[in-house]
Picture 1 (cartoon, one colour):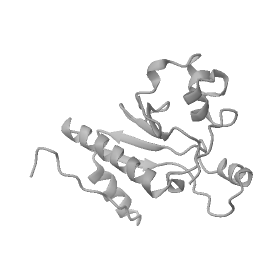
Picture 2: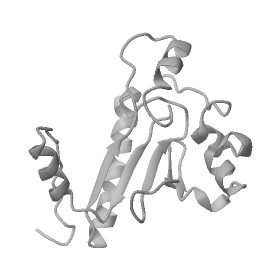
Picture 3: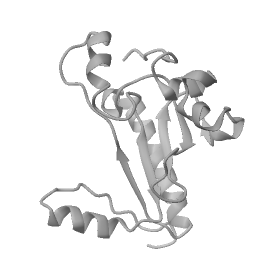
Length: 165
């Protein structure tokens, strides 16, 4: 897979990763790009707080290069993302909190031309840059039961607390 370059002219996350204030939602809302906004980053992913948090400690995991969806990542990069998510889930479990993780975005199924994909992806979500939401302190059991009661199947991972056998 070829990684897409950052798109600071059209993507709020790319603009923020580069530090281009005028193209970043965070910059527009706060009037500045704070160095402390990115909680953690390596060459593939960054962890940032959500601008419109649903709950306290609502985090976003984003690729550090522009891509539309985690489904577009290669198996090896997706595996590293999964390992990172599992590490974050274990961290919250050690603190006594469950965590719900979901991707909010659109997967483009047809066409490989970047411009076509960009035009079609804009209508799918709040941003066309892949991002996972991490919501700690919510009982996933109650959310899953509610979704199942509405006929929506949820694939859940059950993790034991690190201190349990």
